[in-house]
Image (cartoon, rainbow, N blue to C red; front, side, top):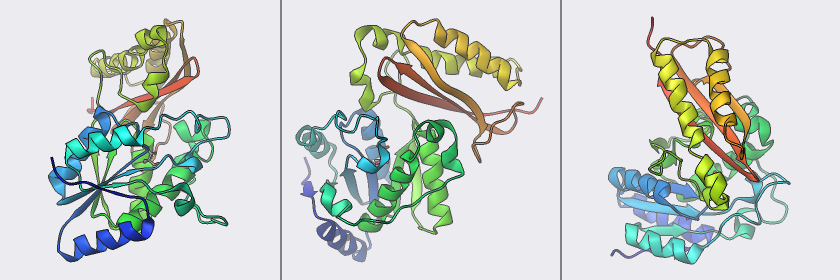
Length: 287
Ligand code: PAF
């Protein structure tokens, strides 16, 4: 087991990162909100593979939760997370204190209004402004060469890549595929909120995505028809309520009626009070 340090102060984190980089080492960052699971460990594996010094941040970012959302209820267990991270052999657990990240009078925000106005952004106003602001701050504090994000949060990933490009942040963004349970459910910190019936119904999200993939493979290109069939299968589960289901161009997240090039099929479904998201990316062959 390697030696992992827990850092809570921004200044200390900045000093360590500078020292490590001055020695010519590559720094990797995996930003998280804790409640770590297999999905996070796959991100850490990517960071370990591509860098010499891995920092995992844990910060439940109040800015990205809406007023009616689950900030207080969001699962927190930093002690258990720290134990798991030690076993993973990372170098630093950076767990900044809330008042360090957003001291009184804090007034700087990062926003990508176009990409944030659709899909999850349309349902969660301000969410991506909160994500971009905290990720930008973490980038400035940790100064990573590489940062790793999961493909499960497809819109977040696209927005962060664009933020890095537009603001010339010079950080390479790497990704890891969505980690799934054996029945296809995407692993998420929010799955623990599901009742046993909701958990039994949850695989329907991935089933709807697989159905879409199969229809496309058979030559269907009309997004309305694909979405109708996805909706039917999701609605067959009593506990499921579709929040949104969209097929968009991956490049700019714009809606399309006829499939072409690279597309993102993204779904958000409510099970009781729990909202789960999932997606697949498809390269559409020309016919
Ligand atoms: O994906 C998450 O867990 C969060 O949105 C992130 C990137 C850690 C920012 O708070």
